[in-house]
Amino acid sequence: MRLSLCFPVLLFGCLVPVDGMTPDDEADNTIDPAADEDGDGLTNGDEAELGTEYDEADSDGDGFDDGVEVEAGTNPNFEWSHTFEEGGYAVGSCPVAPDEDNAGPTGKGYSGEDAYQEGDIVANIAIGGIDMYGQETALYSFCGNYVLITESAEWCGPCQSLAAGLAEEQESVRKKYDNFTMFEFLIQDNSGAAPSKSVLKRWSNNYTLEGIPVVAPADNTTDDINYWLMPDGGIPAGTLLAPDMTVIWSGVDHPGEYNPSGAAAIKLAIKTYEDSL
Ligand SMILES: [Ca+2]
Ligand SMILES: [Ca+2]
Ligand SMILES: [Ca+2]
Ligand SMILES: [Ca+2]
Image (cartoon, rainbow, N blue to C red):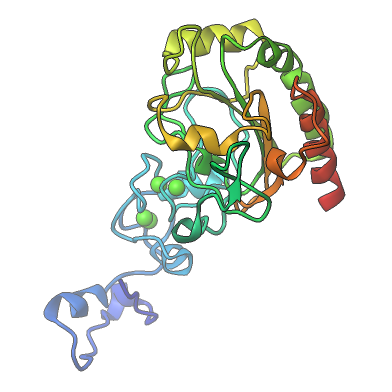
């Protein structure tokens, strides 16, 4: 949608015929750059600069109006970039959407299975999965931040030990760097099934993970779950992503540098993050 730069349109209109334009296009030339056609809090002129729709309050259809997204610092042209009603998560700004066409694992895991290695762009995990509030939550909502993903399961003892220290770890890193967030990917409950909302809530409460999204996959049989495992095929696993959703630390690249608890991997990932700044 093209906006006219002529002004003031309210006094004189702006109906200069342009070759090839339809009557509808010509009508668009009467748009006032200073008006807010769709009532989303941004002027038509602002929307032309942002690339959002001047006649659509929620350009990317993610449930948050364009003006709300600009205010919150999320990307109004990318559906996965938005804040959440509950949880107070530190989402990123995501100025450029991840390169989804080139996303996917190129490394090899413990038995030759596909796994994420450093340099890979990750796919948008947990689409259709929920967090402990029942909100549909996906990784790309945190684009724009450094994201430390931990992969855990409710039945896994070392995962429980790791979870107990996550909130403190996040707090200490965020004191220094506010564009950092953790993302706990809880892949199974005690029975091996994809966790329900109440299981996620219990996990979050047990380890005071308020402010850290605890997210279940839509189901627990997808290949995607295996892409994040540690070199021995185990969990807990840790993977660190750059703001453009590229892997900058992956367990499969560090077979000699982690211990079975996963805690050392988290420390190494955070150190990698700090060294990268
Ligand atoms: Ca507007
Ligand atoms: Ca708009
Ligand atoms: Ca939106
Ligand atoms: Ca958005």
